[in-house]
Amino acid sequence: MRNPISIARLGALAFGVVACSTNPTSPASRTVVASVVPAGGSVAVPIGSSVMVTFSNPMQMGMEIYAALHEGSVTGPVVAGTWMWSGDRTQLTFTPTMPLKAGTDYTMHLGGGMVDGSDAPVDFQSCVNQFGGQWATPGMMGGGMMGGSTMMGPGWKGSNGMYGMTFTFTTA
Image 1 (spheres, rainbow, N blue to C red):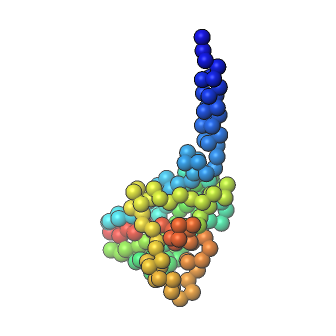
Image 2 (image 1 turned 60 degrees about the vertical axis):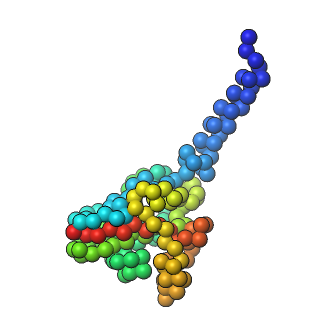
Image 3 (image 1 turned 180 degrees about the vertical axis):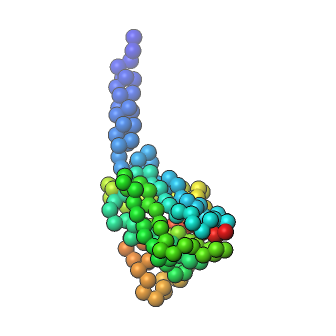
């Protein structure tokens, strides 16, 4: 004979698991960076390569304004070009106006305040262990004195106090 209390507890546990899996802030459904091309630390990247970031869930409209490709470090000049979303808003691709320079360091910068389609913040922590990402600290950003740069304002600064995530690579 089955114990009715155990079955009730099992039902409550199953309900809790289902409820958590649909919660936008639960780890299972939280939006993370799924891939970065080229990954931070990449070398000999062909100058005609695409620069892309893929997210695990669709992103909110307008988040492309919190993405930049810099020549050199995160405080270097922004490379002219266009950021475009895939149809499902999970992949963001950068196309430079001019080909990237050979033998040059570039840094992709993603704002720490980016949010997904359900207005939940993107979790960038996994980028540190994957994809060669580094947090954009206030010190990296020039200690808060970037001469009026908008890359320290809303959308760039995350709730952890960092100014997003950076991925540095070198072209061939």
